[in-house]
Length: 201
Length: 201
Image 1: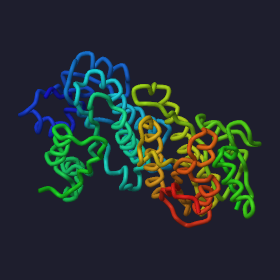
Image 2: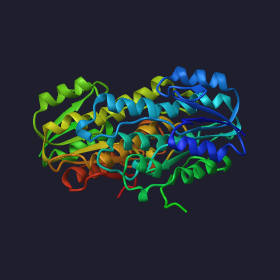
Image 3: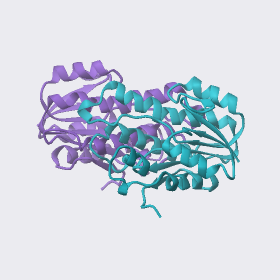
Image 4: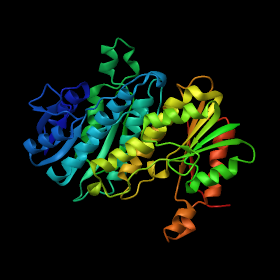
């Protein structure tokens, strides 16, 4: 398959590209560090990306920013960041990607378990992740030509916890998360939210 | 209790005010037909509303617009409507309402079952409703002074189906939905999404 990976240079993105590259042709995109550049917050940037990429069999998004901050400290700009970047950025990857996706192709997006397992400081992120999951469940019913859509909802990533000097024992290694993305790309499910929060094994 | 009802003139809003007015002092607000006016899409309008209202014990929102349209027909403006009005409008009712809410007061917002029971044409609404529910679950963990927050997720409203000349048998009468809102206001739960989709009885 010819697969566009958006967010290819992030912690999860690198693991996803490593898991996919042996069997597929990858096109790597990210905000600044890949051959293909894209700003998720800018709809025209997404349209330009697709114009360069041409026909693909799958789009995998492991990108999107949102603010983690207590409710009383969240600003208008914090809410706008998550809505514009992680939520509508990924929604627009779908809207504008439909026409470049092959029949039976797939979108795999990234939400996060705060959608359903809230924690203090997560009001804006929970909103964005849950919104994305709602979109995925419903968009699956409207997509044409057998196109599938799913989201992976990662928990804490082990490598991120290590980088933040936190206890990594509750984190999932990025390489394990990547297997969930591969399942979405190579599988047949649609409209599903795949939690990826288990213990490594 | 002194209760602000936003969206007081809508189908559900009228039923909610009827269910609350015998035991509580109500302040009715809506976009155009109440003594108190508010435009949910305008943060400054929400701030002006609260400045007029003063201290309240509960805020009930039965307001918010979003577009119902197939994914391929949803425009940038359609997505923006739901995000700005039904989602951030209600989020801003919370953000700016905290300071006028009494200790132990409550917010009761309105999502809708498309958040988790998708249907064709519902991609933008499912996104908005699910996002609101994610916000409610997480915001509950950050609210100060014992302030509670919940959302009611109505299914089809019987009166709406009748008005649309559709089969009303699957709809919930607004008066029954209203009882779920009363539970949120007078109860003790927080961070909950209360589905209101049962058969009348």
